[in-house]
Length: 100
Image (tube, one colour):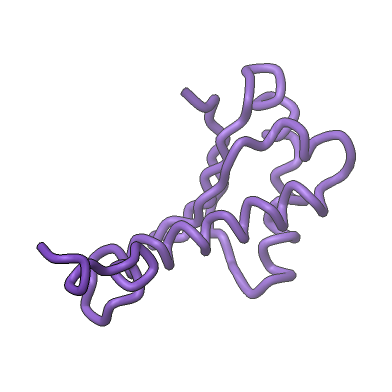
């Protein structure tokens, strides 16, 4: 491939029909949800959230940084649901897991 044919990573990711474009969009969506929950949940619970995902079946999956944080976050299920509702997401259930 000559230099004139080389494409930047942003061009590859943003290309129409690219599998990478969908993957990047999903990653941004998850990062946005994680940032929202970390920033808005009662202190210091945000420190225990590693990442979050709202699955297509409506399950909010919260990955906690340790078993101790997982236990605390399970008690905050109502607050997690409420925070999701604030941004137009409606989790049907919440699962808190310890991140691996």
